Amino acid sequence: MINANQGQQSGDVVNGTFLVNDHSATMLFDTGVDMRFVSFEFEPLLAKTRSNLKNLYSVEVANGKSISIDSVIQNCKLDLNDHKFSIDLIPMQLGSFDIIVCMDWLTVHRA
Image (tube, rainbow, N blue to C red; front, side):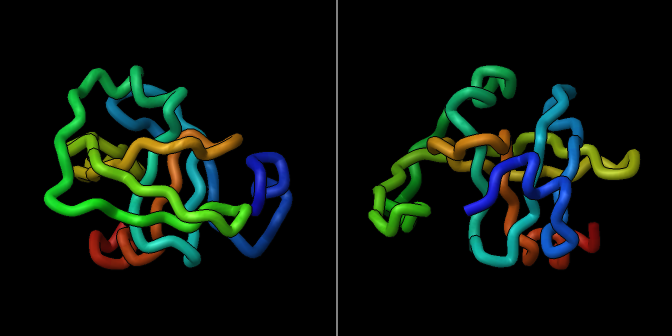
């Protein structure tokens, strides 16, 4: 578990502030996750409606417990170096980051 301040000081993670749907978001690019998440606090800034997932998605959180996720926010716009990418985000409680993205997403999108 890492917070935004620790992430900025660490050389082991990729993090920063990027535009998502034209709003500045603190983001963590993490090798330890396999999806993309948005905090409940940042979700209203996306101004998009949630869609239901076809299947429940189980997420193990920092305390070791699992929570079930049933919705996603589709087709958000992430701006990286003046290139816009479509990204689907799963709303959940995140702590000090607005958005967490799996490193695989960067690779797939050549971002």
